[in-house]
Image 1 (spheres, rainbow over the protein chains, first blue to last red):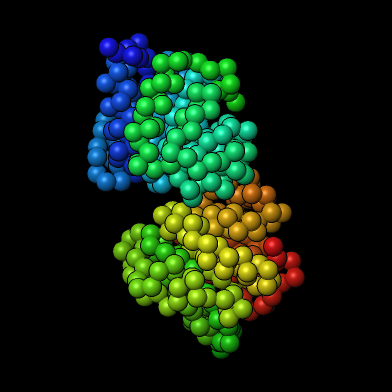
Image 2: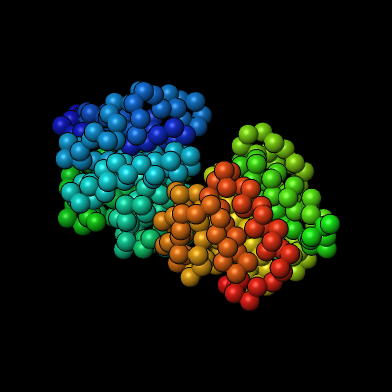
Length: 182
Length: 182
């Protein structure tokens, strides 16, 4: 039975992403019936740090969070470092919080959320190198496999993907959360 | 005439550094007579993002800022992301500020300084992706080729290296600065 058959999930990333942090959640949400869309600053293809390649469906300048039900932010240090400098990507990510929609972020993916200034007073985790940046941005950073704070899902590394993907599907199924906000 | 013949300059980095951000300042200080030492978390060799390789002289667990006159922090996103997670490297970098000694940082190198919590109320620049992290850590971030704040030298990218290297040599020649502190 497809648990999230009517849901549209945005994946926001660029080159240098952690391959499994795209492929595992993508497979998890599509296996449950959702439609997944790969969004990136430039059209064409994106390539992960380990060589996995996938076509870009939409560019960040042309998308609207209103057209999606949830957002996934894979990690990879180069991906995350570049993505945070794309103003369209930052605004798009911020709008999911403004619209109370689930956001799932793993590894280095959270840098764009410090740029969007949406982590203040939220409980979350990340790759450990970002802990100070997230705390300085106002987050309550904790070292756990997966953290769920009112529709905001976060994990640390690819090792956490099974727990991350399970919570992602669960939060998408639940839909909007009042506490998931800017 | 060697302007800084008696000075000992520490270069702190790990794999994935921006090659020219090691080689250019290394050449600049040694050409003026200083002794340069490459310090890294692990012994052996370090390799830059573009393939340049150099031997590690000392490991971060065994060094003392008291044995050096200045610190250089090259960039490269992978280098900087890893280096900030080495507690010995963070403490070593922090001690240069505590001892009022010149510190020169370029590109992504500044992440370790947010970890060391030494940028509060300091004027500086960096690769633009770090601007929010540095502001959140209390820095006055500006977009300039090179910034000098009381012995604290910072630049943005390899394009800034000529100005960065000139100011590095100048600050090392001047020695300790009272305003260069934690």
